[in-house]
Image 1 (cartoon, protein in one colour):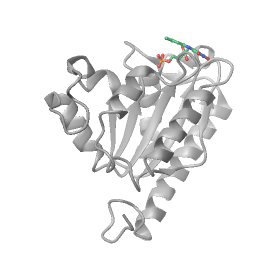
Image 2 (tube, helix red, strand yellow):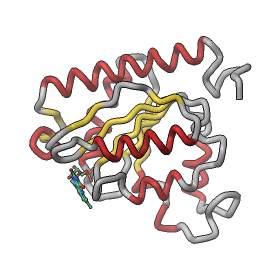
Image 3 (tube, helix red, strand yellow):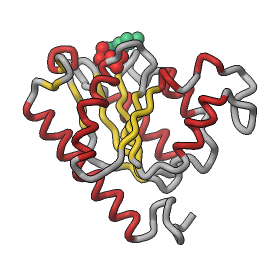
Length: 191
Ligand SMILES: Cc1cc2nc3c(=O)[nH]c(=O)nc-3n(C[C@H](O)[C@H](O)[C@H](O)COP(=O)(O)O)c2cc1C
């Protein structure tokens, strides 16, 4: 199962719209897909005792455990104030450490104005690098996203091609890591 993570809890976000747009690109590669939205993991129920081994609300516990079984994660991340949305980082800060995303593949799509979410994606690369993930090198940045994302479609040929190429490449990346037993889901991966 590949998880597509909508990296904001903003109501009716473009990130959520984009998740539905890319879903069929992954399904076309024969992958089972689940969209996980940061707005639906129960962050509003968190308290300051939920970090680490602390008690987590049931919804969050389920999401955190599910990610431990993921074959790969595609993070869709909008730019908020030059970085990732705080809600996304808050969610990541409740993942099981160090297991979550160690030796698991992750790909990134940025959304924003002039820089298309380059800054938050680079910040996320640092975070996932810290977590020992396998970062897929081809990232996609949707510049001036409000001008190109319309009625559930991306009105921009080059971006559509880049998203399709990323989906194909990321699926091959996952397969390659599994076939060499490097993926955390493998029997004898090096972790
Ligand atoms: C709180 C907030 C802060 C933002 N800050 C930036 C920013 O620093 N740079 C930028 O290019 N766009 C910024 N934007 C624009 C968003 O990146 C853009 O509207 C994007 O579509 C938002 O994604 P969402 O619809 O998934 O929330 C900001 C939007 C919000 C809501």
